[in-house]
Image (cartoon, rainbow, N blue to C red; front, side, top):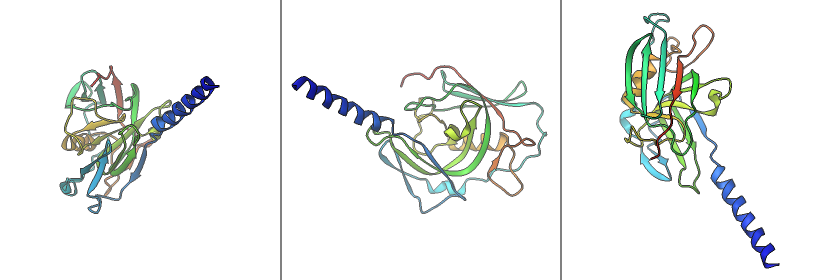
Length: 219
């Protein structure tokens, strides 16, 4: 009888822990612009300050489709935590990044589906001390493919809550320095509509190809 009671209790404990550990649905909210009323966020259950200087970041400029000299491609090397941006064979940018630590960054070939100047992000697990609620996240570009759609929430974005680039720190996204995320946002397709700072890829305005490879190092 004691053995049955113990096994039942153990099963209940495992079930509760599993639910808490897997309750990590990510949520995203598109913002019209920088919201100065949202001055704090939460990262891994810790309160972090939202820099007011984000409101002063330059807006992306609109570029003409087809003005580049070669096909654009973004490569992310998870092993070395580094991003490379190419136009044809020409290396345009190379940046340190932080990929998934609590959630795996997917590997494969993707395309950028949309770009948002500012969004709010929340998710993780309070029970595992990985909860986050981060407003005013700048320069976000979601990517996806037929197996992992952009709605899953994997993206490139600027990061104000840590400065530990080169080390896995995210829940699956590609964390970047804010200034470098801005350069990539301005360079990558889809191009933005006239007078807009956010945009969506389409048949006549496709997103840049993204190739993610390698193995994320343990941190």
